[in-house]
Length: 220
Image (cartoon, rainbow, N blue to C red):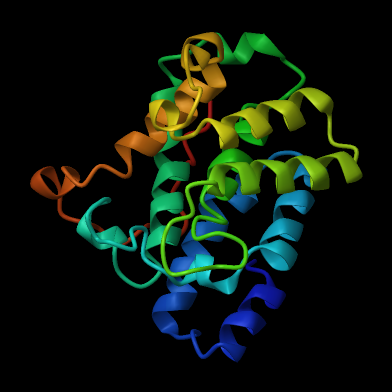
């Protein structure tokens, strides 16, 4: 069930409508509700409720409309981008079977989903502005780390999410170097973000309504 606090913020901002409810419900089902650990999920919800701007749920993915497919550059387009990543990440993760072996006590969903949910949660900065903040990866990574430490989240999960958020743009991040080659979680995160933000998708696909409750989430 979607957060009543986030819904209230959207109502106060006059953003709430049937389409907004549909987009937020799909996002919540495919992302937040698929996180295994209750404590990890609580931290993510806390950040979305208390730290992120309501504009994260409303704005398009690209302020210039030059990047991302057209359906992600409409109202709630950034939310759609994140939702599509949460749906598609499992297909990409299948190419990295060693993820299951790196730390069997840490569910893959508890690393990849918080990383995806939060990687663009501060895309236009803090406070939220009119264009992409080039440091949004740093802002999100530090906010996650601070909240995760306060909640005593497992150090392996906390650090992996921090790294995935920080390096999600891969080669577009200063000092990236060989980081992608050293961490499979970062590799999956970066590849997923690149695939589901590619405006060439316009040439290949027509957008579909996001299914709210599929038979399977596709998790490994």
